[in-house]
Length: 260
Figure 1 (spheres, rainbow, N blue to C red):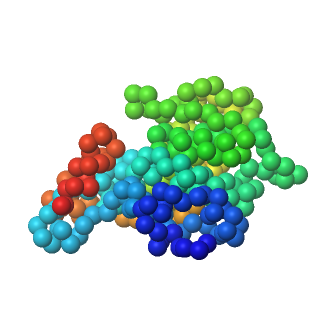
Figure 2 (figure 1 turned 180 degrees about the vertical axis):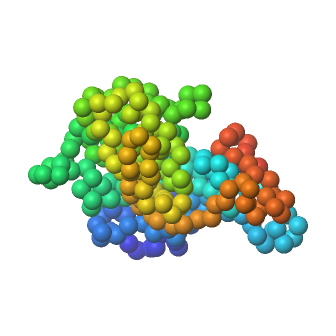
Figure 3 (figure 1 turned 120 degrees about the vertical axis):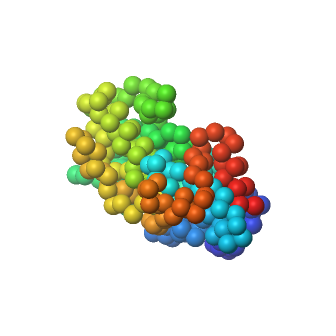
């Protein structure tokens, strides 16, 4: 690649052709955390706590994750994945992981399992899963959040496999809920034992879903980021206010502006 992703401006990122990335990178090459962070920051899809502003008396706000843990970093996947070229790059990176690990292949004859259904955990991974299904020529099953609960929005093919796609994983909260919904409503469907994600930020290697089984986390990027229980959160203790960044349209702006 002529220019490193970390050296690209916002305009260059927005105009970046995903085919260039796919064709010019070695197949074994994977996107680095520094690449992801640079892209997300330039698309205003990444926030991190400003400890220098804290020294100036601005404790501001900090993020409450889906897991209810508190953190000094947050990725807003909607803003990151709404860009088609970036979504395509990240989808192809997940597909590359699937191919490397034979996740999408029959274990005996290595033939592609075209009957595997793809679904994305809402709302962050909905478009990502659609892109992956399109890349693989597979059926995409829409999953939705109704009344705060995750569920499949359409009936899957019985006795066929489902592969779940997520955006970022800390404790697998949404993933567990999605698995439990499928297992309780469609027990004849086989859920493949993987959680395919862009970023594993929580340090886990797998997720145990009670009465269902263990699922391996397969990330494009493994990068441990800070999170704390509300009781242990050091930012709460210095007066920073916890906020759910995606709870309302205004919350993301409140968070990112809170230490200016």
